[in-house]
Length: 319
Image 1: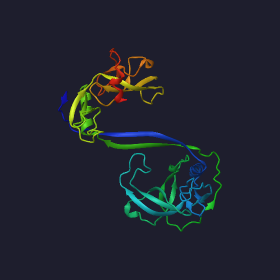
Image 2: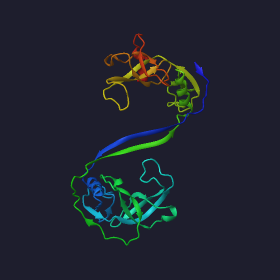
Image 3: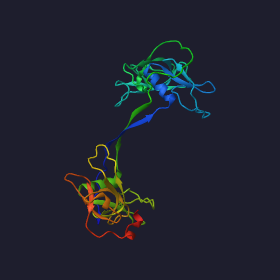
Image 4: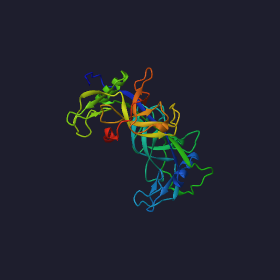
């Protein structure tokens, strides 16, 4: 059944966010613990180059490096860019400059922020110093920011053992990406059809396969798809997995089954949760149908229809 409705393309804000947990080796542990103690450490390579922030392996020779040195909390701006509109979780709430600062005693530059009244107050070559955070935990944010500071260049780097009491051995860094997502013309039609409890795919004009969800182009032939086709609502389980780990903020008790489902009339399987049957009775070839909840824009899950299982040859090309 062909569908001719062509709605406006959807757009929506999307946030991808997760905490990234990592353990620290001896070099990074010393660096972050040092920041907590208002001490900036770098590493010296075999040719005498001092790297700040420190790394564990020489970027030129790939040799392991452990020769820690202490550098000054003053330095020189090597380059900068003005940020007129700070975003969520950035170091300063007011407009600031992103700066690369070569600390006295270092041969490389550290990326951080500079607290300045405006872009006219920032220049490459200006002298700055670290403004330490009042509360420090062993993170790069222990450097609250840099601030202008007229001074002569400090002494060269001095050897440091890297030993501190109660060393920081691991960190949790939140990762977040904010952007506006548009599913495009084809998937906009698919999403809007779901709101009417219909599933719509698109047929390739060359190979005649129907893709659900539609992609706007045939992945095999590489040609645009525009003919919309309603498929399902029933389908066949082609393959599945049993989920035993409960996801955060997902109110579904484990174990449960997530499956690839080939809807009748479609040439591409989509995924969905299987319900209405014990998890250990789900099988390949099981015939299923969607279950909708009030106000939902997509099926909550799929349940068995009671039909005989589909023959393997009927869905083997969709595995």
